[in-house]
Each structure stands twice: as structure tokens, then as C-alpha cells.
Amino acid sequence: MAQAATGSTAIQLPDLPSYVRPFGLRTNSRCKWASDTSIEHLSSVALIDRELLGAVKGGLLASLCFPTCDGSQLRAAADFMTIWMIQYARHARGDFTEWVPYRDLENLESLRSDRLFQYALPGLQLQCANQSDEWTRQFVASLNRHRRAQNDRQLQSSGDTVVPTIDEYTSSLDDYSGAYVILDMVELVEGLHILEHTEESRRFRSTAARIIAYVLDTVSFNVAQSSAPNSPNLIAVLMAQKNLSLQAALQYAGDMIKDAITDLSVLETSMTRAPPAPSWSSLFWRQPQPQKSTEMSGEGYDMRLWVRGVKDCISGIVNWAYETELFFGTTGLMSGIMDGSFCNRKAEFSLVCVHFAVSLIRRP
Image 1 (spheres, rainbow, N blue to C red):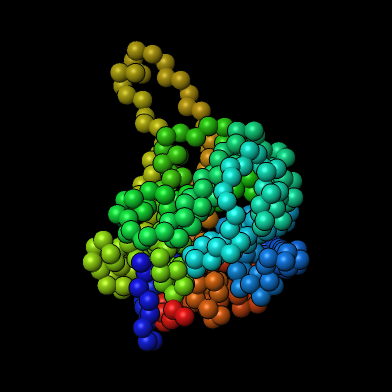
Image 2 (cartoon, rainbow, N blue to C red):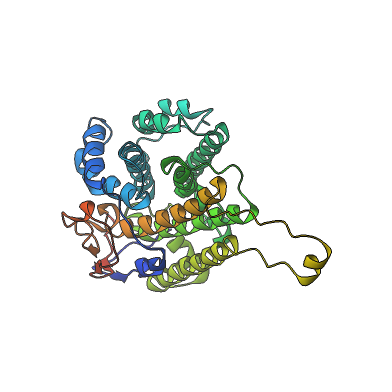
């Protein structure tokens, strides 16, 4: 499905970091410690080699997504997100050597049967101890949808290739990417307790998941086209269904991401809009009830922190994607993220984007 590189074709990637610049970019001060200890822990796993762990930069990913959590929370996130991205990259490359038949998880403990996620389970369980049963059920449900979508993708890749429509492909992309799983972790890692999501906050969550899914599919196209030509990818679907060149499809995907970010900002404004002032008629006929402040009340305050946390995740994933070696080789595309001092300071948008032009990887 994905077109292979012929020669040293260069592609220009969308400037995705500029799209999320209004969200800001922060990093956790414990980034270096979490990165080192997570690599040390996961390097004992026979299915993961240490070189791959260093290439993922899972500690950096967790630190950018969860900049305010404590050390134990960050370490749990680093372990989980490293394995998440290793699984995702393997699927993007069409590498299903470690694939096993899918089976729904009954609870969090069921992760112990997963060949990789079992190694992130102890830290995850420790952090889940104070979470509600409702949150745990939601997290397990998100994991099940993610694993089921990956299983479906594997089965599709092994059969005859039929290019899906754009709507068909994107309808399951949020679950395939694992975006909902990571967004669930905002409440866990930041210690929030959202008792009940509103219709607007649920739309905010689904829009954020769509952004993450689009971003990961866009940046993983290079490895997908080189080693998994029968595995669907957003860029390949756009090329086929809209008769676009590779460069035009990348730009189209960038526009899809930009539009979704605009939708998210509109939803955020709607969620945080102040209540309307009482009318003269309401003042005349009855005494208006004092408005309950949501700024510092428990759940209202948690909701604001949750919105901030979701935006941190989006910005973190976008900027990490241009730095990890999973998609763009050993040099990365950003200057300043891992210069030896980044993990020990607050991240600001002083980072300079070197270039977004990369050479397509040749299919073996």
C-alpha cells in the first residue's frame, strides 16, 4: 500500500511543532533520572535490546507529557510509554514476530500475561492504588480497544490489501495508536480525580486522541513505507484515495492535524467560558444564587489541570516524535532537546528546528 522509496527521494515533513506552540512545552525536572532507571529496568527484558531502549527515548517522552508529576509517577509512565512506543513502532514496520493472538484483559492484573507490558505493571499498579474503580475500568477498556485494533491491523496486513476509505481508516486510528490509553494516564500520573466528564470534555478527549493518532501515523510513514507496504498508513491512504503525491499527502495530513488542533482550542474555550451574567428580569423576580467557583473547587480545579495535562501530552508527543530515533534515525530533527542539559531544565520554545527534510528509507 505504501509506496517504496526509489533512490534518495527526500520528503518535507509538516512543521508540526509550530502547530502546538500555543500549548507550550515543559519537561519534568526528573527526566534524566527516570530515563536512566527505566532503561536499566527494561534492559533486563530479553525481548528488548538496550540500543532500542536508548533510541526510543521513553523517559524524554514521559517527561514532556507529564512535566509536573513526582519521581515514582514519572518512572511508571516512562516504563509504560517506552513499551507502548516499541509496540507501536514494530507494528508500523509490520514486525509481528512477537505477536500473539488477542485476548481481552479482564482487569489491570491481566497485563501480567502480556509479553512486554508485564514489565510496566508493578509501577502502574502502585500508581493505580488511589484511583477510583471507574477510572481503572476506563483504562482497561482503552487498553483493550488499543490491543484489539492492533490485532485487527495485523490480520489486515497478512491478507489481501484493500485500500480503505479515509473515513474507514481514521475511524479506528485513535484506538490503534493507543492515544486514549495515554490520555487516561493524565488523571493517573497527575493525581487528578475527575468524577464525571461532561459532553464537552468527552469531545475534548476524543479530539485530542485524534490529534495524537494523526501525528503518530504521519511521522511513522517513513518506516512503514520501507518495511510494511501492505500495512495501511494515513499517508498511504491519502495518496490512494485522493490521488496525491507523497509530498502533497504529507501536507494534507498536516492540515488535518492543524484543523483538529483548532477544534481542540474551540472546545477548550467553550469549557472554560465564564457563566453569563444574570439578566434584569432574573434580578427582579428572584434573588440570583451565588455562582459556585470552579477555579479552586476540587473537581473544577482538577478539570482545568486535566485540560492542561492533555495539552502537555499533545505537545510532548509532537516534539518527542521529531527527536526519537524510531522514525528519523540517529540524528533526530530537533536541535536542543537532548543536548545533555535539557532534562535538567525547564523546556521553553527556544528549541531550534534544524530541518524537516528527510530521505525516504529504501525498502530492502
